[in-house]
Each structure stands twice: as C-alpha cells, then as structure tokens.
Length: 396
Image (cartoon, rainbow, N blue to C red; front, side):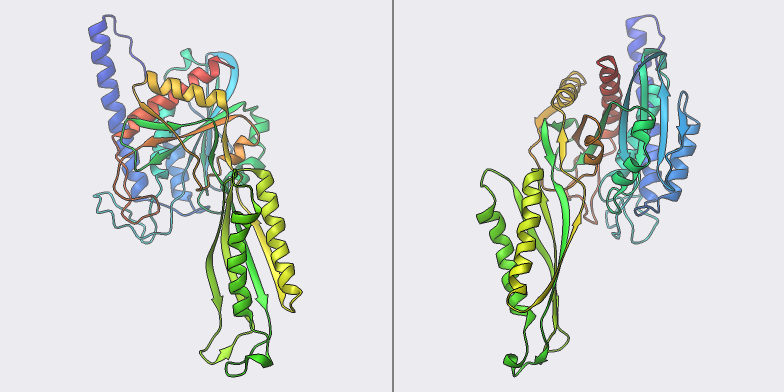
C-alpha cells in the first residue's frame, strides 16, 4: 500500500484513508481467525485461510513449507539484497472461551487465548504493506506462519524442513501480545528474553502392601515426597545464586485405595532455565536424585523431555527494533527475562533474531478463558514490523 499524492496535505489525507482501509482489513481477518481457532498441527482451516488471503495480496508469492499445516511466502524487493524473515504462530489452546466477545470461538473447547490470532493478522498486514512497496525493498522478505507453538515442537519442525538453508535466511523477527501493557507500547531487550522449557517425569517403584503393615512392603509415597523436596534444593543449594532457574513439580499421583500402600508413585513437572550450562547441570543433578533412591531399594525411572531452548535476542537487532519503535511513536520499555517459553528460540539457534512484546491491553492473562486483545493495536504492529524489516534489509 502506497500513496502517490502530490501535496503534503493530500499525502496526509491519502495516508489516513489507506490506514483506515488497512485497519478495516486487519479487523476482518482478526475476527475470522478468532472465531476459528485450531489446536497444534490441526490448523488446516487456518492454513487454507491464510493461503487464500496471501494469494490475493499483491507482490506475495506462496512457497512450500513442507508441513501439513502452516504457511510460507515471500516478497521479492525490486533490488537484490539480503533475506529477512518474520514469524507468526497460528495455533490455539484447548480452552472453552468465556470472553463474551461478539466474535468468540465457534470451535467449542478451543480458543485463541494467547494472541496467536493477533500475531497472524499482524503478519497478514505486513504482507499487505510490503507487497505494495516492493520498489522500496532491497532484498527478500520471508513470511512464516508457524504451526504448533503451544505444543508439538512446531519451531523445531519448521527448522527441520531446511527452509532457513534453502532460502538463505539471515535474520528473523517476531512479536507476542502482552496483556498488561497498553496499546502503543512495546518491550524489548538484548540477550535472554524467555526461558528454555523442559519437562520431566519420575516413576518411583517400591512394593505394595496393606496399609496397616507398611513394614512388609516398600512405600513409594514418602520416597517420592522426599524427592519433591530435594528437587527444590537443586536450585537453592546447587545452582549459583547469580543464575536463574525454576524446578516445579506439577503432578504427583499414586495409589488406588485408602487402605493399600501402592507399588508406584509418579511425579511430573517442568524446568525453566536461561543458561545452557545450568540446564545441563540440572539434568545431571535430577538423575543423581533418582540414583540416590535406587540405593535405598527403589526402582526409579527418570525421563527428561527437552523443549525449546531459551530465547536470546541479538543485541544489534534488538536495538534496531527499539529505535524503529520509537520512530513509529511507540513507548518502549525494557523487557525483563521471563520464565515462560517461546519456540522462536529454535530459529535464533540458526540466525540472529529479535523477539519483542507489543502491548494489547486486556484484564486477563494469557491462557485464561476470558483473555482478550485490543484489535486497535494491530495497525501499529503491522506498520512497525514492516519498517523493522525494511531497515534490517538495508543493514544487510
């Protein structure tokens, strides 16, 4: 979208009209996406919708992502140059919506409760803006609509397609909604942004017996309970106080009846870290806890399920985002590292990248059944991402 008016006044009026048209365009797509949420790796309707929108968008060429869901496209600038990607995630959550919105989810038990409909719409806005400005673009813009961010390792699946190597991507950007920040604000920082996300399971097996005679068996419940406590000591006593880590036991199951000492107890939980060395250290210490119980006669199975690594912003790209946001009139705040996870980090292991939060208002946190975002933030987000990419290509 561009304006060819001659006078300054007419240019301002023209831009105002174009922005109004774009705002209407964004709202239409946002409401459709919010009404049709789909879970990870099941985003078939979303995928088809995004493809159809892009097919009708000037200057956009669809590419083959190589996955059943998700969309990949590109915009070729007038002049050759570098290659910069922008990523949005498209999946939703298994939550029954209670937002009260007039465009609430029509897929019962599924809801866009984390803003991925906003991210997808903002990237459609970028496609609309940059597709009509190819004469001002030096290089190539890759548009990635990623499936399965909430579950099923979507970022890793995208990386395994080889698209970064095939299209010679040099940099990548992404954004996420932030409900406790007002519209017109962003949060960005160099370095750690969100944590590595890992899952663990322990199965502690003893010997079941009658509840009245515990001495005749080997009770797994007190052993597993001690394990819960000892896991907390890993962070408080075995990891340097200058590092940040979380170990949370989120599920403890055992037993079938009030008068039976069970044979097995199970623990499940999550570990969050920023430093890869701390991450490795925690795995080793958790394994050692299992071996300690085995020396007492228990059979212990410890399973570590690695997730996405920590998101780590490139300093130069983070500064580019900060400066461009200020030029676009955003209030910029410093983003402090958070223990939530984000598989955008999978891409940052391949190329420099910057990820930031954009304020979207709202009373309720992400993953809440009443979560909402203010669509008024869409236009600013699309314009900001478009300008960031153009500046990043000029710097290539």
